[in-house]
Length: 440
Length: 152
Image (cartoon, rainbow over all chains, first blue to last red; front, side, top):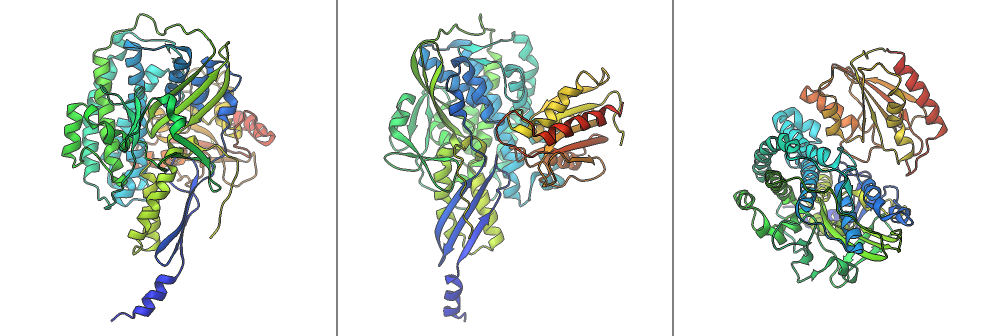
């Protein structure tokens, strides 16, 4: 019979999980968890990428420069920054981009979602589920799968390269539309590529659906854009599953950022209720009805419900969004007619503009104030990762006690995996110079 | 080592707005007007899968990037990636976790590595936002440019 007192002594020992540099996330971050008596007493997700002073950098610049400057914040999601920037400027200047130009913006966003999600699914997240240290190790046993992932990601790159002018930091986006638009025939090779990509995306959904998932359902407040007629990219109300329903201009009335000592990124919270969840799982759960029928069917066949609350299953949801992005891109391309003009004229004037668009990792908020010449007086940018940071820590507070029986090595791995559920883009999230690494 | 010929591809990797991280891209730009016509020159951010795609059609490739390995700033690391594995995290100054070293090793596993892949890594000192190279890196840049040109 086991000696109960000995067991208790064992339980009383302090235990620390410490990961100095998180692998397979964008940018540099660390994790610190302290446990006592099988209870978690401290969780810190540390973000220590160098600070970014983009908001300061924008002050005094012309409104037309914002999309290209903010795009530099991230090499993975530059389109998101460009889209939030142009929409906030158009909101400030009283302009609305409609019709084929609006469709092209959706197309560009499809490209970015395909690229960004596929990279995360295949290269960064899948190795966790299949027990490999990295995609390189996984490729030794799953060559064809990895090749499919690379080719699928490339389909997204091709959209961004063609429409954005180049693969990384696209240069074709401007306030009011695009610098250049293309005749229908230029897009024809893309149609064939995307037909293949849609099939590959469906395979990806089926592949991820059979991974082993820890039982870990949480009662999150999901926050995402919502548009009655479409799955959200550029436009919609900000809604939640707890009754939030606001215009983007009301964002700062409901959300608040605070600086926490252990991170260079600001923590964002709902003023009334605290932490919340943005990104693919929130979008999916709040917008299932807006997915195309083929995508809905694939989601249900993969075993998902109309709402998903297990963050480990975000890999399936991301695959569903890749499938949707391929399907939506095809719809846009097949009905595309070249717009008469690549952009609508926008005149500078004094104003304040707000926007939220759906970056691959969740809502990306921009707020600008302009003077009468269109110079930027003030800028505020809230990226998705700083909004999820508190939720990631909340997950770890709950996940660790449930898995305390695992070896230190396994538990550390699963905690890292729990962070990778959010595909955190730490490069995007940093604002502060203060560096405070606490050693156990 | 001279592994390049007149049909080679040279890829400069880096971020122009992160100080010494720009050195790979700046070397590629300096080579542009000085190499034979049929040499292709590309600039890349360092995201691994795009890099693998860039070199697909080429047998002889040279990649130039900034490195943060702890050596003294301006040190030049030379590797023949077709013959030896790249130490993981060697190019970890990239903000993308799936970067240059990962791209090379994944390509090796998938049989997609160019027959000859030469790698120049210039040890950086400062990777903070900014557009100035450290003096040590500036000097190393000239040396790498000359060394690459000598192969033609």
